[in-house]
Length: 186
Ligand SMILES: [Zn+2]
Image (cartoon, rainbow, N blue to C red; front, side):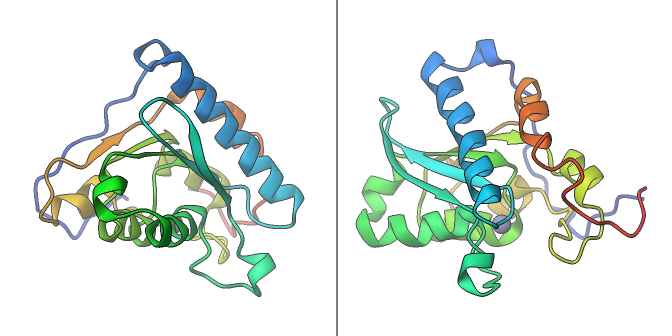
Protein backbone atom coordinates (compact mmCIF):
# COMPACT_ATOMS: atom_id res chain seq x y z
CA UNK A 1 0.00 0.00 0.00
CA UNK A 2 1.13 3.53 -0.70
CA UNK A 3 1.71 5.64 2.38
CA UNK A 4 3.07 9.07 3.02
CA UNK A 5 4.65 10.65 6.05
CA UNK A 6 3.73 14.10 4.83
CA UNK A 7 0.43 15.67 5.69
CA UNK A 8 1.47 18.98 4.14
CA UNK A 9 -0.69 20.02 1.21
CA UNK A 10 1.07 20.03 -2.13
CA UNK A 11 0.24 20.39 -5.79
CA UNK A 12 -0.95 17.19 -7.44
CA UNK A 13 0.66 16.10 -10.70
CA UNK A 14 -1.44 16.87 -13.76
CA UNK A 15 -0.55 14.74 -16.80
CA UNK A 16 0.35 16.80 -19.85
CA UNK A 17 -0.48 16.04 -23.47
CA UNK A 18 2.21 16.62 -26.07
CA UNK A 19 -0.11 19.20 -27.61
CA UNK A 20 0.13 21.23 -24.40
CA UNK A 21 3.89 21.59 -24.81
CA UNK A 22 5.74 23.77 -27.29
CA UNK A 23 7.18 21.87 -30.26
CA UNK A 24 10.74 22.54 -29.13
CA UNK A 25 9.91 21.20 -25.67
CA UNK A 26 8.75 17.91 -27.16
CA UNK A 27 12.01 17.77 -29.12
CA UNK A 28 13.98 18.42 -25.92
CA UNK A 29 12.16 15.65 -24.07
CA UNK A 30 12.92 13.27 -26.93
CA UNK A 31 16.58 14.33 -26.71
CA UNK A 32 16.43 13.48 -22.99
CA UNK A 33 15.41 9.93 -23.87
CA UNK A 34 18.46 9.72 -26.16
CA UNK A 35 20.65 10.92 -23.28
CA UNK A 36 19.20 8.09 -21.19
CA UNK A 37 20.06 5.66 -23.96
CA UNK A 38 23.62 6.99 -24.16
CA UNK A 39 24.02 6.69 -20.37
CA UNK A 40 22.85 3.07 -20.53
CA UNK A 41 25.19 2.29 -23.41
CA UNK A 42 28.06 3.79 -21.39
CA UNK A 43 27.35 1.34 -18.55
CA UNK A 44 25.33 3.66 -16.33
CA UNK A 45 21.66 3.62 -15.42
CA UNK A 46 19.17 4.73 -18.10
CA UNK A 47 18.41 8.19 -16.77
CA UNK A 48 19.21 11.63 -18.12
CA UNK A 49 18.27 15.27 -18.30
CA UNK A 50 19.23 18.54 -19.93
CA UNK A 51 19.19 22.23 -19.14
CA UNK A 52 17.74 24.71 -21.61
CA UNK A 53 16.95 28.39 -21.82
CA UNK A 54 13.54 29.88 -22.64
CA UNK A 55 14.21 29.65 -26.38
CA UNK A 56 14.99 25.95 -26.10
CA UNK A 57 18.74 26.22 -26.58
CA UNK A 58 20.45 23.31 -24.84
CA UNK A 59 22.98 24.61 -22.32
CA UNK A 60 23.99 21.35 -20.67
CA UNK A 61 23.25 17.64 -20.91
CA UNK A 62 23.79 14.99 -18.28
CA UNK A 63 23.22 11.28 -18.11
CA UNK A 64 23.33 9.15 -15.00
CA UNK A 65 27.03 8.63 -14.25
CA UNK A 66 27.09 6.49 -11.11
CA UNK A 67 29.02 3.58 -12.52
CA UNK A 68 31.67 5.68 -14.23
CA UNK A 69 32.19 7.41 -10.86
CA UNK A 70 32.84 4.26 -8.84
CA UNK A 71 29.23 3.91 -7.74
CA UNK A 72 28.93 7.48 -6.43
CA UNK A 73 25.29 7.49 -5.28
CA UNK A 74 25.00 11.26 -5.82
CA UNK A 75 25.56 10.84 -9.55
CA UNK A 76 21.90 10.86 -10.47
CA UNK A 77 21.67 12.86 -13.70
CA UNK A 78 19.70 15.74 -12.17
CA UNK A 79 21.89 16.19 -9.10
CA UNK A 80 25.01 16.03 -11.26
CA UNK A 81 23.57 18.55 -13.70
CA UNK A 82 22.62 20.90 -10.85
CA UNK A 83 26.13 20.57 -9.43
CA UNK A 84 27.67 21.51 -12.77
CA UNK A 85 25.16 24.23 -13.60
CA UNK A 86 25.36 25.91 -10.20
CA UNK A 87 29.08 26.38 -10.72
CA UNK A 88 28.50 28.03 -14.09
CA UNK A 89 25.30 30.05 -13.67
CA UNK A 90 24.19 32.46 -10.96
CA UNK A 91 21.14 31.82 -8.81
CA UNK A 92 19.34 34.53 -10.81
CA UNK A 93 20.22 32.86 -14.11
CA UNK A 94 19.20 29.42 -12.84
CA UNK A 95 15.76 30.72 -11.94
CA UNK A 96 15.13 31.49 -15.64
CA UNK A 97 16.18 28.05 -16.92
CA UNK A 98 14.32 24.78 -17.39
CA UNK A 99 15.50 21.26 -16.77
CA UNK A 100 13.96 18.65 -19.08
CA UNK A 101 14.04 15.35 -17.29
CA UNK A 102 13.22 11.71 -17.99
CA UNK A 103 11.28 11.18 -14.79
CA UNK A 104 9.93 12.77 -11.67
CA UNK A 105 13.06 13.58 -9.66
CA UNK A 106 13.84 11.83 -6.39
CA UNK A 107 14.07 13.71 -3.10
CA UNK A 108 17.84 14.18 -3.49
CA UNK A 109 17.55 15.61 -6.99
CA UNK A 110 14.56 17.77 -6.07
CA UNK A 111 16.70 19.08 -3.23
CA UNK A 112 19.53 19.88 -5.64
CA UNK A 113 17.03 21.64 -7.89
CA UNK A 114 15.81 23.64 -4.91
CA UNK A 115 19.23 24.60 -3.57
CA UNK A 116 20.44 25.52 -7.03
CA UNK A 117 17.42 27.79 -7.55
CA UNK A 118 16.25 26.14 -10.75
CA UNK A 119 12.98 27.79 -11.73
CA UNK A 120 11.29 25.14 -13.82
CA UNK A 121 11.32 21.42 -14.61
CA UNK A 122 9.43 19.36 -17.17
CA UNK A 123 9.57 15.58 -16.72
CA UNK A 124 8.28 12.61 -18.65
CA UNK A 125 7.67 9.64 -16.38
CA UNK A 126 5.75 8.96 -13.21
CA UNK A 127 7.67 7.53 -10.27
CA UNK A 128 4.86 5.03 -9.72
CA UNK A 129 5.29 3.73 -13.29
CA UNK A 130 9.07 3.54 -13.01
CA UNK A 131 8.69 1.42 -9.89
CA UNK A 132 6.97 -1.24 -11.98
CA UNK A 133 10.37 -1.78 -13.63
CA UNK A 134 12.81 -1.14 -10.78
CA UNK A 135 10.80 -2.57 -7.88
CA UNK A 136 13.06 -2.90 -4.87
CA UNK A 137 16.26 -3.35 -6.89
CA UNK A 138 18.91 -2.05 -4.48
CA UNK A 139 20.43 -0.02 -7.32
CA UNK A 140 17.27 2.07 -7.64
CA UNK A 141 14.79 1.65 -4.75
CA UNK A 142 12.45 4.44 -5.79
CA UNK A 143 11.15 6.85 -3.16
CA UNK A 144 7.39 7.38 -3.04
CA UNK A 145 7.93 11.00 -2.05
CA UNK A 146 6.48 13.36 -4.65
CA UNK A 147 8.89 16.06 -5.75
CA UNK A 148 6.04 18.53 -5.36
CA UNK A 149 5.79 17.54 -1.68
CA UNK A 150 9.50 18.27 -1.23
CA UNK A 151 9.11 21.64 -2.93
CA UNK A 152 6.01 22.42 -0.86
CA UNK A 153 8.26 22.31 2.22
CA UNK A 154 10.43 25.06 0.77
CA UNK A 155 10.21 28.82 0.70
CA UNK A 156 9.74 29.21 -3.05
CA UNK A 157 6.11 28.60 -4.05
CA UNK A 158 6.78 29.72 -7.64
CA UNK A 159 9.02 26.80 -8.61
CA UNK A 160 7.34 25.15 -11.60
CA UNK A 161 7.16 21.35 -11.78
CA UNK A 162 5.45 20.11 -14.95
CA UNK A 163 4.69 16.51 -15.83
CA UNK A 164 4.23 13.69 -16.33
CA UNK A 165 3.96 13.39 -20.12
CA UNK A 166 2.40 9.92 -20.52
CA UNK A 167 2.66 9.89 -24.33
CA UNK A 168 6.47 9.74 -24.02
CA UNK A 169 6.68 7.31 -21.11
CA UNK A 170 6.75 4.24 -23.35
CA UNK A 171 9.90 5.38 -25.18
CA UNK A 172 11.64 5.97 -21.86
CA UNK A 173 10.49 2.76 -20.19
CA UNK A 174 11.63 0.72 -23.19
CA UNK A 175 15.15 1.41 -21.92
CA UNK A 176 14.22 -0.10 -18.54
CA UNK A 177 12.62 -3.27 -19.85
CA UNK A 178 14.58 -6.16 -18.37
CA UNK A 179 17.25 -3.84 -16.97
CA UNK A 180 16.39 -4.12 -13.27
CA UNK A 181 16.14 -7.11 -10.97
CA UNK A 182 13.36 -6.56 -8.45
CA UNK A 183 12.85 -9.34 -5.93
CA UNK A 184 9.11 -9.17 -6.42
CA UNK A 185 6.52 -7.09 -8.16
CA UNK A 186 3.53 -5.51 -6.52
ZN1 LIG B 1 17.65 11.51 -8.09
